[in-house]
Image (tube, rainbow, N blue to C red; front, side, top):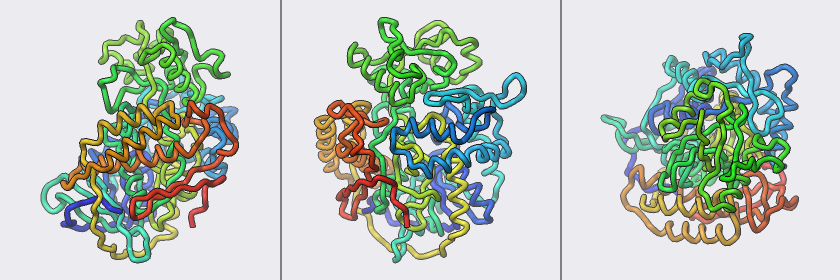
Length: 538
């Protein structure tokens, strides 16, 4: 199954194509280059416009005194609600400290304590101070800056900006051998072209734009995951969409990316209250306001349901030097007429992170040979049913390095792609009703009726065909495929676990301590199965 496009008008080659310029893509590209292989780095907007630079939280790594990978592992498993893959978590926490040290060696500068050591803080779900921050609440921006500086200095990495990747190219052995992409440019690389490679790496980040409100930037339409689905790759755990509990509330008319109020604010002493100024998280979880994100998001949702209000409040007025500690958040609040030093901050949950994605092994290899996936687009099993705070940047660092190592040791030859014409394309008019339907029926709270109603809406929207290939149509088509995958998996999981919460099945059920693995065939039909462990990718 492929998207309708114009005929490719140009061609380019590189040993490895990396799609995405966040921490996962940049780390992979740099490590591939260390193996003396050429890299084509494709990014949808400007190279620094991905989700990484928006990360206000930090990077979790067992670097502090008294901490250990084993303790980091236990916190990750607790947050993952019984669905983490032990082998993936072991890789993440054991290789994490060295990955962070390499990042520092590349020039990343993290906040220091008064004694000159790296300052380590705590976030929800962590029982130790193990979060590295940069610029207070601008960690992602610093990580992106350091990696981009290294990438731009390497002449062996060719960068194509403003390029939307459309579909995977396969050879006669059904192996990945490149991609089609559309470039908004001038001259020979304008419009649709083919990029051929010996390995393709998807690192396109999240799919937050499936929902009406999200912390993700506008480019986060899940293009890489949708591409893999259309190519026949296995996906897993896509029902687990993490809603960040504290996103600055404006009003229901505001769609798209919303300002994030980092968990680190609660880590520094802020707490949640309802309209009666009651601290409603107390007694709900041993860690109260610093409980794992799914727990906090659910309790906020309960408060909103019981009061009929569209938000709760975050009280950060007791934090000393708020503007210095959280300059980005402070400015976001001020821009919206809120002084967090004196005012309560209105907050509500919004789509934040996909814990599932394209099923991969510990080397990032998908079920399609020569197609690798890294970061939020991938499902390694490390996050289980709910990602632990600040494990996402770490995952990109760790698995980006592993993918590069594996590719270098198992490098395929260049091969010619099969020529296949695309015929699937939906009207961009579906986007707003799709986002509203997903938010209402497949958001923080779900049930059988809401999910079936959402799926019915999606099926109706899927009939609105477009015959005009363009970026809006391709993005709309990608969002529709992803929304369908999320809802279908959520219907199968008849329990509440992690970031999947069903009001009609409010308890966790051991029968569903399984991964729901999906695949779409060439006719667009979905197939699902369950597995107690993530399957080995042959």
